[in-house]
Length: 336
Image (cartoon, rainbow, N blue to C red; front, side):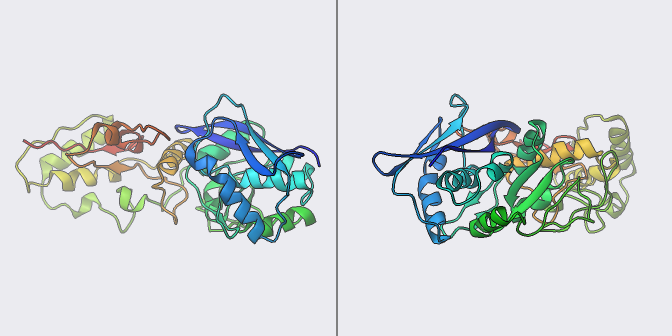
């Protein structure tokens, strides 16, 4: 038995860092040992990976297994590494050719039954993988449309660990592949929006988290009267200005603010990727809209904490309302 390697991505905020995963099966006391500055969720991967392999009908090696995540000095958090750890281990045990797992990036969480579950932050992770020279990434099937937005990479959607290993053995990826940047002519786990790099993609909005100008969303045409306020919104949108609305409750301040994004142009391709990456890391990306192309609208409650507004966290950093409103509208209410 030899050492097998594969690759994954560690998220630091909304930025991805390349992580190389090595698995060694050797003599010694039987057990799985994970090293490389891991958090609790990642340390528990040993139990998820073991159950996933056994329930996928692969024999667990009765030997000392060491899995190293390099660079060792980089903190690694979350369950994003489960699939990569399993593939490196399977390659080291000889269940899959080591050469076929060395170059691709594997992203995803494993269920105890061997299913590949979706994770947050797939878009920024794939962007970082492509920047590191990746040509192929394997992601959960429910994240395939999101990953397929990145140009220049082949996306393989994975549903179960067993199907993925069988596909790697035979050279036929399970579930088809997705190439390019959101081209609906390619196969994917879920349909992608139309459009190509460098142009806006019309007809999509952010659902409940934004007023994006969709037909079923808030629109300034719904407002009756309010000529002065409407004029103020138009000036604000045209010049990118801040707007202060003062008045008693019930005068329409929130109603007008929710319709401000309808006056803003659709996001360009690069801008849409920025906004989508932030929402992906925060875990609020709508399942049926892999690409956010309308300016977001975020209105935190007036009792929101500082951390929820500006972001942060003691473990994994999560974007706050300010970041979620990037290239869109942040509506702050003050009471008193």
